[in-house]
Image 1 (cartoon, one colour):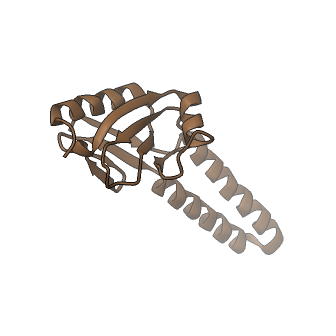
Image 2: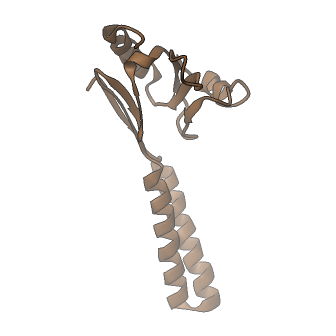
Length: 152
């Protein structure tokens, strides 16, 4: 394993989910009674928790492949990795994006890495991956790509 990072929802989002569940409990409880208020609050908390738990993604780079969540690609199909700051990542994910690109973007993470593909059979020009450590991920990918020795 050359690089590993797990992107999770920030604590503030969990607090907001809890406050939402609490407000649902109070509003429904006031109108329909304690039982329905508690049931609605528990359901709201469970839904928020499920959404936040599934929003996490793991990025790994090893000697042979890059894995981002369930997506995997061999390093031999990659040609470059460019670290992007908040402004550049926002531009590449928005007005500067290619509609064919593969994006794994998290709004609560400022940095990203643009990974250029070098496969003539793949219509995807690049992967854009959110990361808290764009320099480290780009360096790990560049080193692994160089060690791997280029295109298939």
